[in-house]
Image 1 (cartoon, helix red, strand yellow):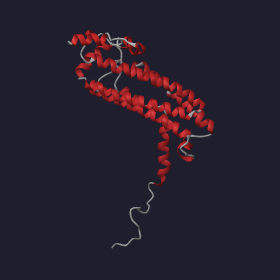
Image 2 (cartoon, helix red, strand yellow; image 1 turned 135 degrees about the vertical axis):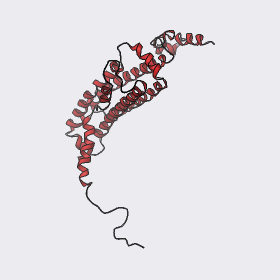
Image 3 (cartoon, helix red, strand yellow; image 1 turned 60 degrees about the horizontal axis):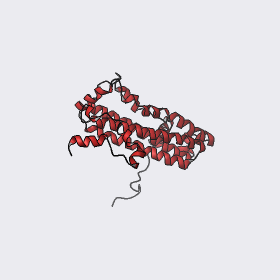
Length: 251
């Protein structure tokens, strides 16, 4: 077939039960017509970002369920669903690599098609930024205050690798993976438009760098520092070497 014939089939897929159920006809019309693409990479640009929005929709939907299970203290459900969120975050981060196959010039051509828009307006991203405070409040009420525990108890003073600990670790892993996604996105910007430029909203890219340093659950990060300070009181103490017996005689 000719290229034009393939394009025609791409834009008018054969619809059977599977395609009808997934609404593939509507899904594949969510991108600009192929003939209107500013360059050959614009389809890739649109699809990657649209898929990111779909993953973020699923993450938000899943985290809403997690909120309910936090209230019920259903640890097994929480850990399972947070595992799903972690996998989705890794998928989101990995697929950013596809955009690195674009040249800076091709990106600039596509960038002009966005009008005044920028990734900072992503509805899925903005929604996910709103959810961590609710997750923390629910975790604190059920697994800390409701059990007479503090973060220090869970991680150090009364550490038992129990429910509160595994849920806390599931939350901090989500936090870590989200920040890794932000960091990868920052490097994508660095590679495509440069960190010395301004974003499409006219804001310095340094704002994006600041966002990448944000933490959803600072208490869970701070406890690591607190423990190191407490346990580290022994770091400066001179102790006998464990690599040899101090009383051993040379042969």
